[in-house]
Length: 161
Image (cartoon, rainbow, N blue to C red; front, side):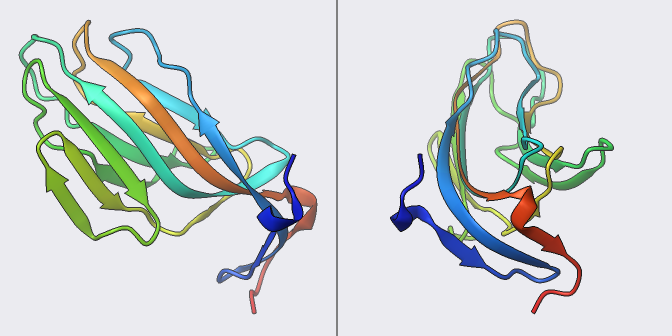
């Protein structure tokens, strides 16, 4: 349960938002060969994703994976997509950390750090890690999100200010 130290009041452009709290979210690892690992914003909340983390491991099957992070609205439209890494080599892993206020881009052997946009996601939106052309042994692991939740009853859309 959130405590008083976890409560925030924010006023982003276009929405006035009242009290909120931070929540770490662990997404269960999907079965090997899954192209997507996703979570949907619960109907009782809007969320701001503060950071996201995942590891993508490619099996020995040839192909180009191009894993990425996406924000998708309730109608299936992709509003944000950022590559984790392009052309993940066979039998290798790449771990990515996205963060608001993170560096614009930082890469090292097997680890990428990316800047995350500061967006307020409505209930019904999906945040997902996805890859093209996955092999049967490819795997998403260690998927974590840290979000700030705003109850929908305290969120008013319109002119922010």
